[in-house]
Image (cartoon, rainbow, N blue to C red):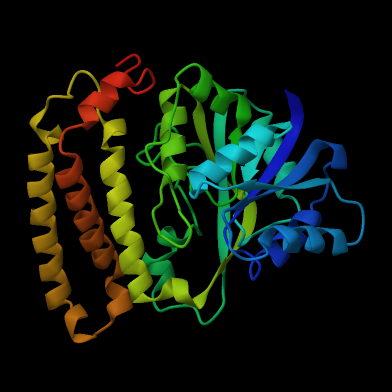
Length: 342
């Protein structure tokens, strides 16, 4: 496979966001033009995203790498990413969201990390927020982790064996050979569709990290890989957070299948009734905290975001567990990836 990086920008109605994203990509330094490319995947947009992207790229002066626009009509970020991966010419693929502005040395530094080991499956970086409006109260206390910015791990480098062996999808770099192993050897299929249009279904990036870890690859994080993440004012409202956290919970419930092995698959703790009772207990506890913390009386509501996160996350898990019950066992045994070596 040709050495280089294919940047995949997945878009849905991105006319208002994509111009600075493409401008920052065109400013990459210390990497030959022959070793990278940009692929915009228009995921069922209803605006002029495809044409606007082409016009924006053509209007940027100076030498630029190869640039293409593809269309993926099946809604869902995971579908768009797979479309981009299939079309990529290079060994590594970088998922650049339409609101990510990469530092000019992002690609060159990524190469240095990826070249250290063929066992690296994914690399994630450090995002700095750029707010459309004012920074919301208590942002760096309890909100940054939900919006794909800030420090992803206390550990630099290999985080595969840590408590949280995942990186967020914003500016994530994937070893394409590792992804090919997932698909060809283990017949990997996403359990999650990730974002669909304007919905907040999510966590496909987490699932990819978990799947690569199951396949034996390493997950890396480096704070030297810097990018800016534009955050619109609508994404820091309490209504947005509640919806986001609820969908986190739905995704977490679906991905329960990644957290079991053959030795404990019939454990009581894996039974959906136990999970539902635990969620109900957590909902009661967190609601009590919110009540006595003044949240329901409009007092310091942003200070209580961590508790709001727990509340809606448990509501999402509860809904998913009641719907799916114990069918994760069938998925586990049917997957050559999930039950390998357990």
